Amino acid sequence: MRGFVPFLGHRLFRALIALWLVSTVVFVVMRLSGDPVPLLLPPDAPHSEIMRVRRELGLDRPIPVQYVIFLSNLAHGDFGRSIHFREPAFDVVRGYLAGSGWKEYQQGGAVCGITLPAGLRQAARGVDLHALRLACREVSRRDVDDAVGVDGERHLDLGDASGRRRPVPMKGSEYKLPVDTVIVSIGNGANPLVPSTTPGLDTNKWGNILADQETGKTSKKGVFAGGDIVIGAATVILAMGAGRKAAAAMHEYLKTGNW
Image 1 (cartoon, helix red, strand yellow):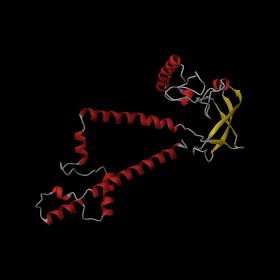
Image 2 (image 1 turned 180 degrees about the vertical axis):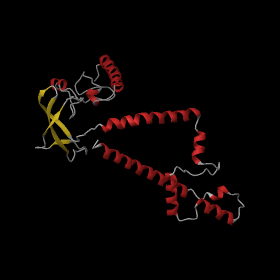
Image 3 (image 1 turned 90 degrees about the horizontal axis):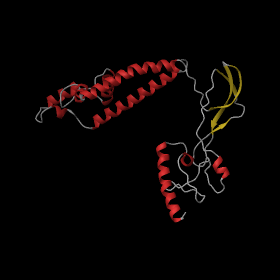
Image 4 (image 1 turned 30 degrees about the vertical axis):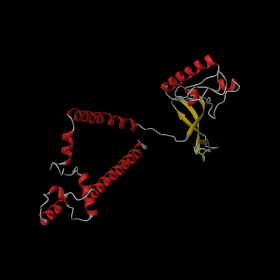
């Protein structure tokens, strides 16, 4: 709960900033689009009538004052009136929503009303995120309810030639972390067995086999590759597509013998 309140406050602050920016853009666009008063009155309206309408709409005031009034109205749920329909703008928009669309909107609100409190309740239980940390090893398991691990702190280096930064260990930053349960999450990496036992098969710095993306041909004659071992962890669809391309290339190779 201790870390949840600052997290929620930060999220709310960012949401308010976003709403303020959107409202400011809308205000600027409205003012740049021209004077709306001529659209409200007939072409032969006298000047006195034009000034009266401008006063009612607050358009005779300085722009900063109009901006403050605009934000105040939005905060109170007043989105203005439609020039064309002479009705509140929100009522006009709501009237254009189809019956099914309005029901979906209501259903979405009901779902948010149920799931949001549940999510907040789960978050309030307390989750501590340790950024740039990596478990070095599990030291011991004293009994069923107590395991002790060693965490090591990482920091981002200056980056390689491509500009990509990577976490590197900080010496002396290890510390013990008592836990109740250890869940090992194994990553997805290239198996080094095939490249290390197959001379002439080129790989990149991550151990992925270098192969032509259209044919699956590798640097070793007669060897084709595709899927995760070439492009890294991806989807089954991409792997299937690579397999189809490689099968066509294999068929051509077996027929012609050309590599």
